[in-house]
Length: 304
Image (cartoon, rainbow, N blue to C red; front, side, top):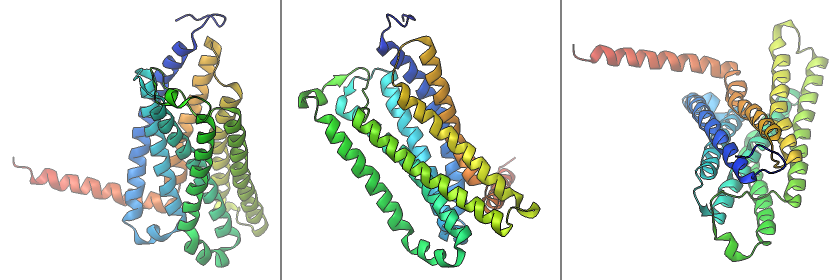
């Protein structure tokens, strides 16, 4: 591989980048899936948690994270192994991963709005949110899928139809043109503004009502931790979009560092939004005790 930024083969850099990203996605996928399975098991075994909107959104959010990492393994693995897949297959896999990634951010926005309604309008919002929770989730996915399908049709109309079914050693990406980038930035800032506005209103209401006193200081810490975690999601995405794909050791290292921060944020999501919850912590404790007790019983039954 030529390390010179003046005479470099971008495909070599993309393959090396894909190899590193696929390896990171494998670790993130197994970690996120393990935590997701544990949390969903705890929620399903508790009838009270199963009915609460925040836990339904949390489980949906965690499933999106696991799916995103799993699709990342597939797509980056196809690029790293030079699978020579049809362009259409590459586009579909990448498009689905991108849609699931937008579902992660969309769910975070819904979780922030739900928390705001629960804090600021606890009596009026409970029945309303409970009655429309599944409709809102369905509408969110309809918006995401409709947006990406329209952008997909716009970008796929440029190459001839024969090129779409042609096999490529290094899988190309879709939704990377100027229209898709512009719409993606608007979509990102729209959801981010909803999240930041919700947290600001929660903080203001808590400060006004005296919720953030010594007895409930954890609520203030939770808001701050969520904001820091959100920045780990958004900042790498913005730099990714701004830089694009460039050759050279510096840009390669910068790209991997940003991806590492983004992947680290994905792994932190189940812990911050899941195990930070006191009810889930209690459920996790009982679940672990049950697993240890069952393991102890099975060991006692083994013949000597």
